[in-house]
Length: 309
Image (tube, rainbow, N blue to C red; front, side, top):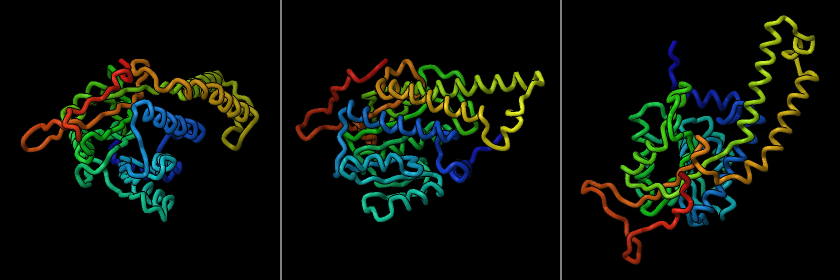
């Protein structure tokens, strides 16, 4: 039986059930979201991208607005957030009520019709991988590049490995290679200037621990030796469940220093990548136009050392 993926319904239901659209496990979500936000800060700094009160930012797939909130520490840039989920946008509107520098819209990136050349920075965190239709994916990239200003930057974070082993591991997820991202953004006038990997050691270790425990429980249940504690697991926390929770918390605390220290991480060692593109050409009816700086020199980026292969 094929499961139909409707983005708005799927992410609305996810938000209604968990209060966010990230990791289902609450403990893992809290850890992972914090790691992503800190990694973005470090990577923007390493790529020499400056944000201040005059910066115009578009956050594609803004969700409940965590990244927009994080950007406030840079002096309050003007930020536009879009998301396909009206439930998350309603929440974000309440969160930023009274803020004149935050604008929020319920719309998918492949459908958005924002003014051209409007944003200095476009962020797109774990969004493109959830556009399962290839034609809509191409349209989404086209829209993102159109609203970016010449010389501006686009930051994407997605699963984009060197080699794709399983293109569609879930109905709501399509894995495309790094080469595909670079090629498609390149055809829309953007050049890859920086690439970073997220090690996600804590997430990997946490999931590994949960998998081991699940296997042990399955093995015990098959032998018919189920303790009274395990029988009561569904009715409330037991000593074993409390110990398991404490073990997970301890594991994340132990791995956190590594996750904090390692980014930016060489991209070849992980499938979760942050790619930073610079818009260097304008694709118009007359073809490509090379961007020139105020000094009349062709724009060049001295960030070659930031690219890990």
